[in-house]
Image (cartoon, rainbow, N blue to C red; front, side, top):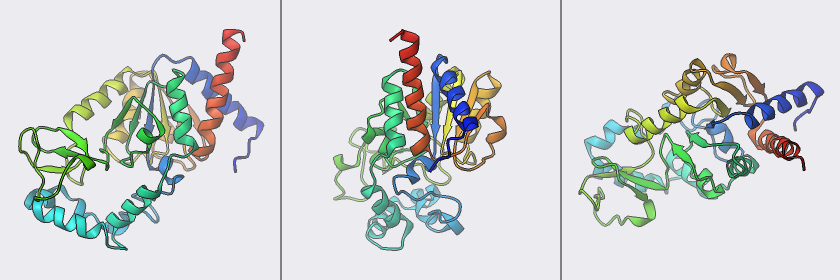
Length: 271
């Protein structure tokens, strides 16, 4: 539970003022946002990839070596308790957007937020109702052709033949989630860079600031003149770059920030 000291409330007010008076606000969202929906983080204590477990099955090199065998293993592990693939599937299947996700949607709807660049693959931004999203690490609910880049919901594909093939170019289909050793799809990366270079304010929400290229985005934005606001319960490598630091959970802080933004809007409209 947050302790709203006068100093902390002042920081919240400053953050709301900065957001409301910025022209183009971009949010960089990380795993900390989804932890509050019951989805475990990938790294750190208790993370799904702690000690390297599960990484072989998410190796792009291993996928390319034998895509058909990879898919067979994937389907086996999705029903195998104790495997990281199974743990993530169960957690995401049971998860729903938390108050932080819903506050982000309202910020977008009211024009306070222009784009969400998310590192999360859990689809919760879409479920909550966000429209302008860039999923830099992909979306586990989609599949993607490694030849033409076509993306479709996983439910649109049949798995009678493995590996599945693209209906447009007959290329090999993989999970849209970006694997270890796999380049970020160029179209997504270019769109993210455009947002980073356009924004005058970036909100850093629940990101560890350790995974590139996303970890570089706030630094690039800062060097181009943007302000940075960090919302995170822990200090990160990006903390020293930030203008305002709000320590706490995004599920609590984002609704409070939204409330202040709406109050500022009412006051400035004279209502």
